[in-house]
Each structure stands twice: as C-alpha cells, then as structure tokens.
Length: 161
Image 1 (cartoon, one colour):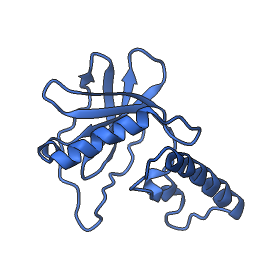
Image 2 (cartoon, rainbow, N blue to C red; image 1 turned 180 degrees about the vertical axis):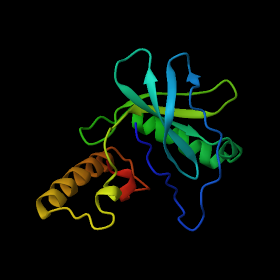
Image 3 (cartoon, rainbow, N blue to C red; image 1 turned 30 degrees about the vertical axis):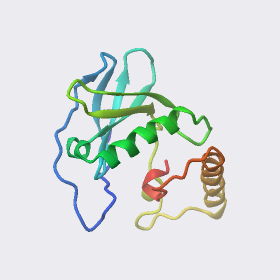
Image 4 (spheres, rainbow, N blue to C red; image 1 turned 120 degrees about the vertical axis):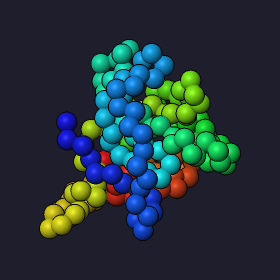
C-alpha cells in the first residue's frame, strides 16, 4: 500500500519525528499496519481490526500532547462527538480508548482514497461537475455536524477524501 505524504497543521513548522507504532496491537484488537498521516497532535494509522474484515483508521494522540489538559479534553470531546455522528459523508466511529501507558486513540472506518489536496496539486484540474459534486458532499457533511452542535475546526483539502 502506498504511504501518504505527512501533513501537519502549521506549514511553517515541519513535523517532529515520532515513534512509529506500526506493528503494535491496541486493545488486543487493532494491529497498526502503517502511518497514513501525521499532524502536530496525532499520528493516523491504517490498522486491521481482528473483529471485523474492513481496515480501520486509528488516530493516536502524541505523548507530549497528554501534558496539556486542554488538548486532551479536546481529543476526548472529539471522540464523544464522533461516537454520536452517523452520516454518509463522515467516517463512522468505531471505538476510543487508551493504551496501557495512557496514550489516547480514536478508531474510525478507513476511508480509502486520495485526499482532495492531491486531486488539486500541480497541473491536475477537476472539472466543474466534479467540483460541484464534492462541494455538495462536503456541505452536507458539515451541515449535519452543525445541526448536531459540532463545529469542525480543521476543514481543508487534506482532510477531505
């Protein structure tokens, strides 16, 4: 499987090298198969769920974030909100827990595909019909979240698959 480019929230600050937890099994269930993306707060892994047949995505909060109670609380709120959201244009929530050493993680369905940013890079161009279709899907997903009282704080092309 090809690896996706690393991403991070602040383009002026490159990501710090992280421990790669590939191969680790969380909760005797989720085997981390490889890094999909890395942000300033977490690493997202492709994983195998031993209880299901479809691959999943595991978002593992970086250890240094755990010392910031506000960021930990934000991550826990994210998990709580995701657990209550079901929509065609959102990744389905599966689980949330912490590792024995206290690292928090969220498990969602894996949305296989390329981020929108890759579709729009270089000389690549999307036709007007495709742009409208994607725009409507993004708007429907965001409208659903807003009706549920959730404000997505990181809408960008690299977060749209």
